[in-house]
Length: 127
Image 1 (cartoon, one colour):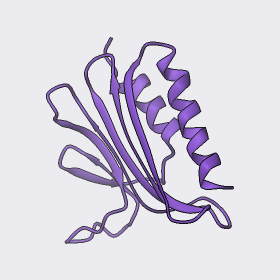
Image 2 (tube, helix red, strand yellow):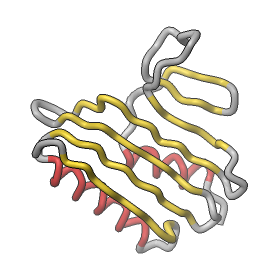
Image 3 (cartoon, rainbow, N blue to C red):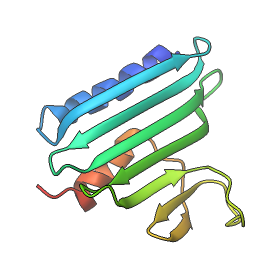
Image 4 (spheres, rainbow, N blue to C red):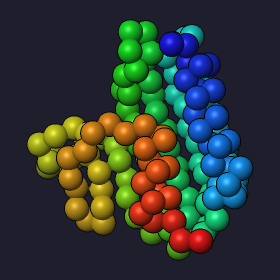
């Protein structure tokens, strides 16, 4: 898969939700290092003034590999609701891929944007 195709999938996912009125604005950027490696960043504002900030440094040469990623969702007061990432922590929680919920850090699978958006809409978005 090319990075441009991966970016198009993300853009289409965001566009589908924008049609519902749940996403009020979006800002997506991509930094292509090669045709299959690069950084994708985005910010989505939702109808309840909550926001999602995300970034993925992906390598798509053989399969989708998210070298680094962060999906940071915050409420209208800019307080963290959750964040998925694979950043190193000291002390280490004993796993790489994790989710922050308040002060708690729990093991998680590597999410994709569609899964994150479904979680926001189903569990957190107040309209």
